[in-house]
Image (cartoon, rainbow, N blue to C red):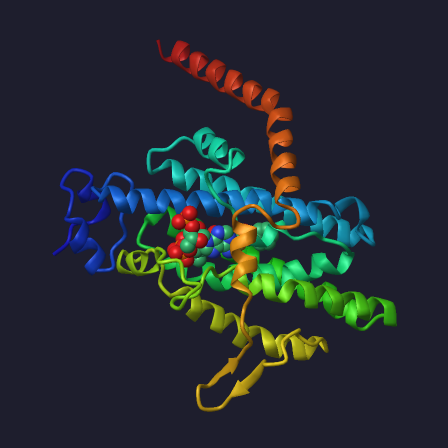
Length: 324
Ligand SMILES: CC(C)(COP(=O)(O)OP(=O)(O)OC[C@H]1O[C@@H](n2cnc3c(N)ncnc32)[C@H](O)[C@@H]1OP(=O)(O)O)[C@@H](O)C(=O)NCCC(=O)NCCSC(=O)Cc1ccccc1
């Protein structure tokens, strides 16, 4: 019988045995260095995406069309900050420091999701982000609740619950606009047209073919980090989202999108992989603005970090004094 997580702290089980038995790997368990670095890379990118992802919608908080919409949007953007903090904490269990990860984000040595390098031109974009971007995020993250690394999997459970709410609020914004004036309907359609293809790119490069990256999927699936390939998740997303677009009364900008009875899935058109690689490499419409805003926010927040550390030191010293 395999040892429990508590027993493993003193008698580490074999990593391969635990993975084969679909058991969780915990921070103090032995793990191959490559497993650890893959997790740090993915969790850090995920955390960076959450905090950079606050910007596109954050810019609409002061311009939301009603007090109700403003309160909901503020709560959503705050949730994203919370997801980032969860994820940085999960990464820290692997022996890295969050300041080191932030430094890598600011200097372009670590990535964040391509999707946040597109502008939010109108209020309908806030709806499209909730509906499509959170919708894609959930499709990708629900399987991560079963990821082999315990702290990441556990963080994903709460994150997914909150993302489901985010997805519904985005859908509801578009539902309202699609039933509004002609101008509001046109605004909703324009947002769906602009966000559809970038949302499909969020799932990453294709599994095979010329645009495939020779990436991490195979190894990550063998380690139980990824549970589905990029293309499988993309297909699930398309199958889930097309009927939702029909309910909204919005079209999707793909003339090749149609149900395939034989496959039991929607067929869809070719994705512009050059665009994804351009955006990943830093040449998307908003890459420079996103990073410079993030650097400025970090610099301007230095006093908060200093005050928090001073307070923590003081509290620790007081507790020590009380014990002595
Ligand atoms: C599926 C994938 C994203 C990529 O699979 P992997 O096995 O890791 O890699 P793969 O071999 O397939 O790719 C080869 C290379 O291409 C990179 N690359 C690929 N795709 C992208 C891309 N789209 N953008 C940028 N880079 C991308 C990839 O890193 C790798 O480069 P590397 O070798 O590292 O230099 C995986 O990391 C994952 O599931 N992450 C966790 C989920 C997550 O991060 N979600 C965040 C968004 S949701 C959110 O934030 C919530 C929210 C909603 C609304 C508002 C605010 C917030």
